[in-house]
Structure formats: structure tokens, C-alpha cells
Image (cartoon, rainbow, N blue to C red):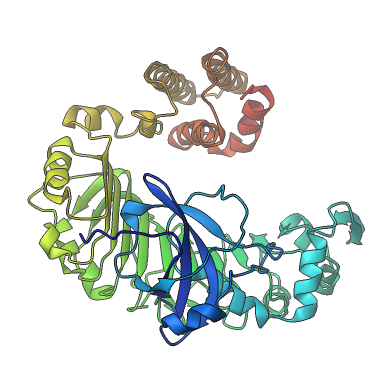
Amino acid sequence: MTKISLQIGDVYALQERETGKWFAFQIVQIGEENAVYIDLDYWSEKIPEESHLKKMSYLRLNHHLWNNKTNQCWAPIKFFPSHAKRVGNMVIRPIEECKSYGNWPNGSQQKWTEKWEKLPKDQVKAFKKAHTKWNETTIVAGKEVKKNLYGLSDDILGVVSYFSEFDMLPGLGRVNTTKDYPQLIPFLERRYLIRELVWDHCHRRELDLSRTHLEEVEISGEDVESILLPSSVSNLTLRGKLSPNLRVHSPNDGYYMIIRVELHDDFLPDVGLNRLTNLRLTGIQDFNLKGISLRYPGLMWLGLAGKPGYIHDVAEISNLCELETLTMDDLFGFSADDFPRPENLPELRNLWLESVSAEAGKTIKKSYKGMIQDLQVLKLRSDEWLHENLNNPLRHWDGSEFVPKSKYTRSVALWKETRRRMIEEASHAELDFSAVKRITIDYVDGFNKLDRRTSFIETEEREDIFNAFEQILNETGLSEFKEELIQLIDDNRRW
């Protein structure tokens, strides 16, 4: 890898992937391991030249909830994009202290600035005003609602007669629904700032979103066979059981789009989009990668996550010649010999392996060390560990920097004991629901005690505890009582 010597005041240019336009940024501070860059207001189909520097200034952001602020960030020097073109050096202007940490720019700020300049001015003005007037309310469907309400769900969607009532809520940005409202899609088509749609249990055979302005779409529903997307969509998530006939249509044919699929029974439908650049599969139990490079030859990012699970034909990844990032988590069944060699993936910059076979992981780490920008091989697992933890929903706490080893061990023991008792109770001819509630109380009290002296349960761990309990209910056939028992945990938890 080429080592670049950064200098304060240097201006660099990169090409934004989706649009092909050039953007620029300046180095304004250099530390031992990180440097601060600030975005410049250059955005053109032509690469900037040194003569352009005298016309460049810091980019002032006004998209979304930005308010005429500059964008600067501490980024790791070792990950500086080696393909960046040095334009020249210019004087640094007065700026605020940088408190943000992240990675090097990719042109998204310049791209967003251009997009927002094309949006209807009245909707943009109303959106911003709504999010600065936190206490202003209005009446929708007979209820008092804050004007800055961001998300709509069925509790409001289902009680209005006309969706035009939602025009009194200019701050809307997300819709969550489990039902089909005839007015929904026409409403989305005229609301330019609603960027997220989550539609569970969609029963439409053809879902035409092509005239909306959505950026993120999440769909579940076996009936759906066709999804038509607008060019604005950058993230599509597919969940649950999917139709084998499902096809997704996008003006960009998947280029610069992320598709996330939460696999059901390890089935991945051939949705089309042969220019797809980013694919992330989760919930893998036993999945074969054969043919993935034929479906999506231009993948730049491939993310694979197990339940945990087994992955086969890993050598297929060698055919993804444009791959830049590969992540694998909680996956087994492959050896170091199956895994691509560095020379097979000439564009690879990031390789992140977590919770994989110790034997394979050690060899892979050795072969890739010093060959790519970012290499992380964490939580290597033995065959014994896999045997003991295959169905353990808290397994990813093992080795976590946020969960002490002793807390992890006792948490797993608590989960196993709860599972054993629930299985025993569910096996009786007549269910004693009071006993099920006692087991639930013991479960939540166990975590209350574990978290009492040294707190370790934060947002992510809290979700894990609920999900682990839900797994027990699903396994024992008690999921019909899920809502009541989850509420019981919520009422009694102290974390």
C-alpha cells in the first residue's frame, strides 16, 4: 500500500461513485494517527485543477436538519484513500473545533446538497421549521399531535379519513405500516421529505414506489412479486418468507444500492439488479454462495452474518473482482484453503471477520496482514465453542468489550435455566400460565441482580435479553403469549 504524506492545507479530490462527479476536501489538522478534513463546495463533472482553489470555500450544509454548518471530521490517516488526487494547497480559514470522528469523505454531503436544492422549497421550509418548533402541536384525526412528528404508524394511519390531514405534519420522514391503505402511495408521491417506508405483511403482488422520493424501504410479504423503486432509494431490506418470483426494478439496476436480506430458510430469491454493488445477508443457517458472482458480478461490499450458521463454496468470492469490503460474522464450515487469497481480490480494502473458526481465522489473518487497509479478525471460535453455543442467542456477548466474562457466563446460565423450565412447563397437558409468569419474573429478576452492582446492560444488551426470551417462547410454542410476557419483563426490569 502506498503511504501518503499529508500536509495541512492540502486539497484533495475524489470521484463520487453514484454520480461520477468530483468533490474536494481540505486537510486542516493532523494528529499522530488521525487528521481532520473539511468538505469544500466543489462539485463538478470535471476534476478540479489548482487554478480552481481560489474560488473554493468551505461547504455550508443546509440539507435535512443542518443549518449552515461546515462538515469536518477526524479520520484515520492509515485509511486515507490512496486514489485521491492532490489538487494543491490553500490557506486554512477560521473554523470551529472538530469533535466528530469517522472516515474519509465519499461525496455524500455534496450530493445531498445538490438534491436538496432541487426539492420543493415550501416543503423544505416547513420541514425545517417543524423541527425547530418542538412544542407546536396540531389536531389530526381528533388527536393532538406535535408538528415535528417524524414517524407515522397504523395507530394514526388507520383512523384518518383522508391522508391530506397529514399535510399538517410537515416534519414527517418515516412511515411504518402493516396494512394496505389505498391513499398511502399517492401520499408518498407528493411528500418529498418522507425518506423511509417500513411495510410488514405487504399483500400487494406489485408494489409500485417508482414515483415516490423514498431513500430506505423495508418490505416483508410472501405475496410480493414485483417492487418498483425510484432512483432515490439507496437501501432496500427484505425480510421474512419471500416469493421465489420476486423481482426488484430500479432505474440504476442496483448500482450504488444496498440490499439487505434477512434470510428465511436460507432462501435468497434472484431479484435481478445485476449491477448491485452492496449485498448483506443475515440469519444464515446453512447457505451456499455458489452462483453469487454470476448474479451480482459488480459487488463492492459483501456482508454475511450467521445465526450462527454454516457457509459453503466460499471460494466463489474469488470471482468478485471489484469487491472492496468483505464481512463475515458467526459463520463456520469453511477452511483457510477455501477462502480467497489476497491476490484473488485485487480491490479488497476491508476484511472484517468476527466469530469464525479459530483454525481458519488465524491462517486468513496471517495471509492478509499488511496487504489491505483494514483487517479485523475477532472472537475466533473452537469446535467445542460452536457445539455449545449453536443455539445460544447471547453468544456474541462472549468476548465483547462491554460485557464482563463473568456476567456473560451467568447470563447464559440464566437463559438456559429459563429455557429448561419453560420447555418443562409447556410439555404439561394443561398449561399453568401462572407458572409461566413466575418463570418470566425470575428471568427478569436474574438480569436485575446481574446489573445491580456493575451495570453492563445498555440499549443493545437490553434488546438481546428480550430477543433471547422471545426465542424461548417461539421454541416452546408459547409465542401467543408474547405481548403479555414481554410487557411483564418491561414492567419489572431495572435496566
